[in-house]
Every structure is written in structure tokens, then in C-alpha cells.
Length: 303
Image (cartoon, rainbow, N blue to C red; front, top):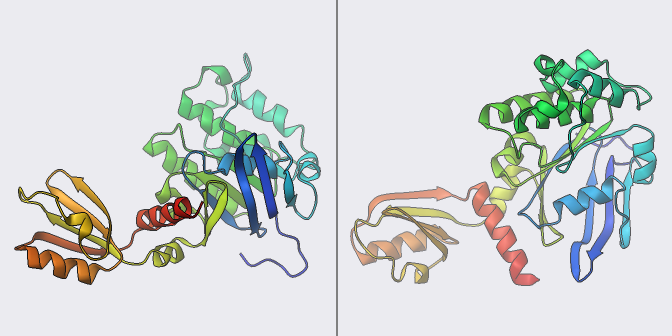
């Protein structure tokens, strides 16, 4: 969504740095998220996603640079009820029902959603009368989402929101998240599931070793990964020499099938043909997985 002229971004990192001892968890991030956007933070474990989220929620202060929400300090936005968060490390409250818990949290905000609407949006209406400490992992995760929605915040921040969910529950969660985003809210979520980032975000921001290494749509990230994939049946043939073929940057073997990630598919196929007959040849453009591997491999080489 286009930022309205004169309106500050919902989220703004300016040269943000955070270190823990010798580890630079966030290493000079510059990032703006416009009001109304849905943005995914994508990266491997240890890439800096959770630390970046702790900075924007005001749970940690940057050692350098700055972080702002809606043009002000994160703590001010949180206190004003403009931010809802769903974090990984939370424990259920004992001896209260889901409805009682959501009602309590909603009461801490100046203009919360009606509790019934919160339960409906989060897809937990059937859990309203259940005790919050007697839910499955997936159910508890959905209730955490309801708690993040309860105050009707302008910005919702989700840290690995589907980590404990099965496939059906993940689909239900993303349907709920999209419904909330369509109300004009800003959503920032971290994930290491590439397909989730591609399917549910307007933009994907890739972090690696605390650095921002890419920012764009899924299609833009795919285009940034030059080359593609060449796959073929080994048919009993060994893999010796495949990594030395023109253009090949990575070799993967799955059963009796070789998959070559290559910067120059044409040159790779020609060289393969010179080795003899090729069975089950497949040439495909770069996928989001290829783009992610290329981006993070490059980041590792330049650290």
C-alpha cells in the first residue's frame, strides 16, 4: 500500500544496531514499512528476526541508529494501544477461560475490538469456554493471535506465528490474518517458511547475520536469483564432476535424481549433453528457495 504523503511509516529502522557481547544480532538495518502494508521478515534461525522485533516493540534499545513506530518511540506506540504482538515465548494463564483472558487483555486497550469479534477473527470461537492452560499447542497459538488482535491495534507484529500449527490450522490462521489486514491494518511477521512469505506478504525482507540482504516482492526476489535449476535422472551414473560443470553453483541429489543450481542453465545443459544421454531432463527458472539460498550464501561470503 502506498504511504500517504506526510504520514510517517508504521515502522522505521534507521541504521539500527544491536549487539549481545561479541554477537552483532542486528547490523545496521534500514527499513520502512508503510501503514497498511503486510511485510514478511524472512531468514534462517539466528538471522536477526527476533532481535529486530524486540527492537521495534521497545523490548530492547538499539545500540546504534534508531527504531520508530508511527514517527515516535516504540514504547509510546505500545502504551497508546497502537501495537499488538504475538511472540514465541509466552505461557498460558492458569484457571481462566479463553474468553476471560481475551476480555482481560482487551480491557487494557483504549478502543478494543468487541470480544466476540476478536474470537471470530482469530477463529477461536469454539474455544471461548475452554481453559487457556488446557489447550493443544496449535490451539494455544491461535489464542495468542486473538490476544494480539484484542486491542484493535493499527500494527500487529507476529514472531513465527505458525511454528506450532499443523497444515489445516496454518491455512485457518492465514485466512484470519488476511481478514485483519484487509481492515487497513499493518502486519509485520517473521517466518522461515518461504511459501508463507510469498503467499501472504506484500513485501519480503530477507535478513542474514543481522543484515538486510533483500527487500521486494516474491517475484522480484526470484528475478534477483540469476539462472535456474537443471534436474535429470542419474540412472546409476555417479555425481563426480557435476559441481565442475559450467555455471553450476550447487549440486543436490535426491534418490536417483540430480538437481543442479546454475547461473547459466544453457551452458550447463550443453555440457551435460556432451557427457552422454540425459534422461528426464528438466530446466526451470529460479524459485524463491533458489533466491533465498543465493542471497544468504552471498551474505555469508561478504561477512
